[in-house]
Amino acid sequence: QVQLTESGGGSAQAGGSLRLSCAASTYAFSTSCMGWFRQAPGKEREGVAAIAPGGGITYYVDSLKGRFTISRDNDKNMLYLQMNSLKPEDTAMYYCAARALSSNCRGSPTEYNYWGQGTQVTVSS
Image (cartoon, rainbow, N blue to C red; front, side, top):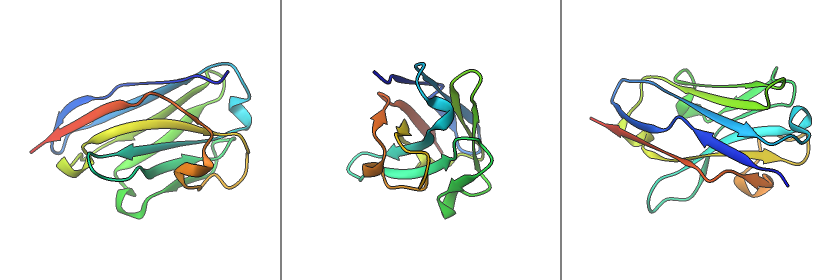
């Protein structure tokens, strides 16, 4: 069974930074698309960033480019999201997700198969 566990969330001031981590259980992590998604209260879950299995290709929501960076360490089965210049509108529950296939990493939440429990990020002004 695939298990994904997020950590690193918390509270930050606007303009600050947080780094989220996601630990994946030992499965075909290195051959899976991985993504970060977020969901704010009353809103639908939305994609934040995704990364191809080898780590060489990344995708971002246009509005977050330049502020967020997704990365992975396949040797450690770890996924990361570095978030800089945080804004109050970044406040949400952040989820790590894995896609069973190694293609079409830039998929919608419905195309991702395994999910973590989420980690809360709260940004105050």
